Amino acid sequence: MTLDEIKAAVDAGQTVHWANTGYVVHKDRLGQYLITYVPNGSCIGLTDRGGHRLNGKETEFFVAQSKDAAENPGSRSRPDGQGRGAAPGGTGAFPLGRQL
Image (tube, rainbow, N blue to C red; front, side, top):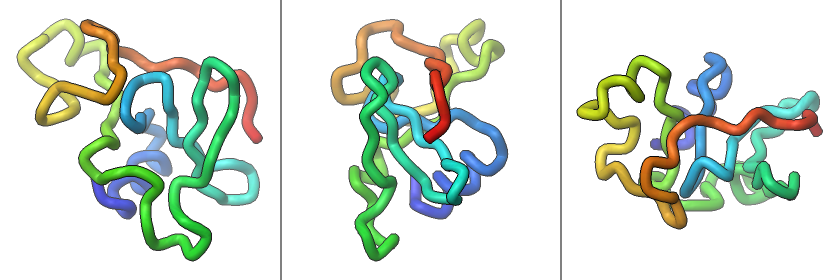
């Protein structure tokens, strides 16, 4: 996903992940796009300080599968169906415990 696609998906209320479902992209109260590692709450910016270069490869970002997609395993959010560190069958999103 490109930077603009990621931002548009987050703004539309979709759950965007980076690398695996443990990382969630969200927008904070200040309008900053962040990547949060859900298990421990640590986060980094979606981009470099200039706001132009992603902190990750475009191919590593993907939208969480909907429940309908989970019932139809032939459809996947990622074209390659893989993510760095993703557990087999690891679909779905983790809710954020708090907004930063």
